Amino acid sequence: MKILVCISNVPDTTTKVKFVENNTKFDTNGVQWVINPWDELSLTRALELKEGSGGIITSVTVAHVGEQSSEPTIRKALAIGADDAIRVNVESKDAYMVATQLADAIKDEVFDIIMCGIESSDYNGSTVGSMLAELLGIPSVSAVSSLDIEAGNLLITREIDGGKEVVTVPPPFVTVVQKGIAIEPRIASMRGIMMARSKPLKVVEPSAAEALTEIESFEMPLPRTACKFIDAEEAEKLIDLLQGEAKVL
Amino acid sequence: MAVLIYTENWEGKFKKLSFELVAYGAKIADMMNTSATVLSIGNVDEDELKQLGNFGASRILSVNNTALAVMDPQAYTKVIADVAQKEDAKVIVIANNNAGKALAPRLSVRLKAGVGACVSKLPVKLEPFTVFKKVYSGNAFANVVIKSEIKILTLAQNSFEFEETENTAVIENADVEVDRSLVQTEVKDVQKQTGELLLTDAEIVVSGGRGMKSPDNWGPIEELARLLGAATACSRPVSDEGWRPHHEHTGQTGKIIAPNLYFAVGISGAIQHLAGISSTKCIVAINTDKDAPIFEVATYGIVGDAMKVLPKLIDAVKAKK
Image (cartoon, rainbow over all chains, first blue to last red; front, side, top):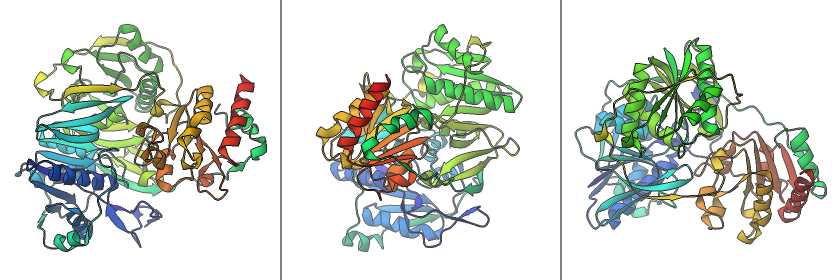
């Protein structure tokens, strides 16, 4: 069985978000780019599964839609342990376009398990994984908090409102993963970094897929009004303020 | 032409989230001079369905088919897409929760409809169709133009204020075929939390961080929550340490919530935690460190020891009852 992990290249979580060109473009100046945290956890789980599967899972491939500038992020995924990578050589425009490019790029290969993170930390759309499944005409399981192999069967846990369900679907399928899938992202070893340089990275030219949405402009959040401090000795006054002033009680 | 709203049900019942979705969809229908139609999938009785009419829907379509007992994204998508086409829906409204996130993207592909994901406001304008959404995990917002003929909006829970209206809705059984062969999800086991208020549904949340020092100190947090009808939550280190269950973890990698009131007790306010509560209307911070970043986003702050402050708050709430 082969696993495909889709990865997105996002600004580091601690980036000070700014915009340029009249608030229409993200300011990439001085930004550190990383593997989207959810995708990193999904890659970690994919590698754990491969190692623990006793040969059932033969390879872990990463796929990414983006220009050459995102190759350091792909190399990082290879250094962490992915066997090979696919990059669709085009700037990502929106979720539909990214999902379609991914689907077109992998249509001639069979990946039994496709793993996508629940959302990218930049666009927060939560859509690419399930779009990819619909484009490929295969099942998807969303809100996945664990993926295990037991007696040769793939058991998937999905979160539902107020609980969880353990489900199975026949492969190939897409899992959209979230909290719980892996605890800590795996870190690349020095040996991994050396090996990543010679692992295969296939560059695929884009298909004609177009975007259905477009960002017109960005806005910064309104500055919060300064915090009103209440003396700890008179903490009970807070309850009056929450009732009378903020009107939230 | 119509606005179509899909709402799930929870063991045959709707909840505030359903009414919020219907009211939001009905408002968009008003903006577009058309009507709002609701689609319900599952075994829901007529009195319950009728309630959806109290929030501005003019028609309520119900699909009740045993093949749909399990939420299978492919099978559900096909039903919603078929109804959307039959109704000539130009806008489809879905919740931005687990089920909604599983369905909206598949529906987008099937109908070639752009998604405005996790919106919290009405569209900014109809021509071109523009929505306002959170990006960069709450550190910014974007005006997004949806260029396709059909638009799908997923609404962030507890983000839209609404009222009840006069009910003139009609209830119908939707005439759609259900393709059993699409149902490939097989449920092997279900584990449910019972009797607890769901964190994502709660209007008030009392949350504790590492500053609580020990899992044995959660008594006052739970008591304050009980008195206020609130849910309890925690920060990531607390759930990682096993002091509290994982489903309470609030933050970028945990639950993302938007209550009216959030008590951050002994939580310093790391950027990842703030990403999970950025849409909260009023934040109260209680922390011994006056320089903790949580005070930068809080509306009210108390610098002090939670174990001394919480009992005072508990007494004050009791005195009001």
